[in-house]
Length: 189
Image (tube, rainbow, N blue to C red; front, side, top):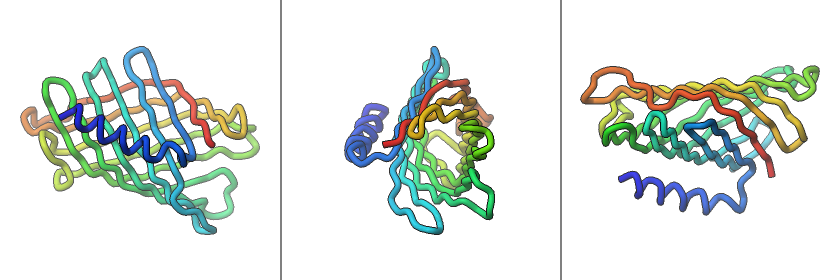
């Protein structure tokens, strides 16, 4: 099951790699995360982004892939603020043969005011309720917060904390499948 998910995700990533707008690589001693993000449409009202991600966490025995679609915009007259809503499809495995498929809805935002010379804060929150959870899962909640710094116009360094919790059918309790402090960078091209 996991091999099929990874193969499908690799094919999706290969198809978007040539036109990808940004790549995000985050890691620590026990885990890494790779994300490609590509704008599908951009106009005066905002941007529509497609993204694909692979996450491996050896500490929590988690391997997952996700595909998402986000709608972003800059509300009001506040330079450096970007807010968005979106949906993500998750598929993966964790711990002792726990497979999960979830469809989550969520929010994301970033704030990097020009007065802070490249320093910013970003975060996201995605939730998959029971009705959108399949296989061994009942619910999924992902949250992340990042402190970012733009070292170059096309490169941001970050330190971030990410937590992903899964409610499994058999355990009937919330279970952490990813809980990590990661450093990384986002490169735009």
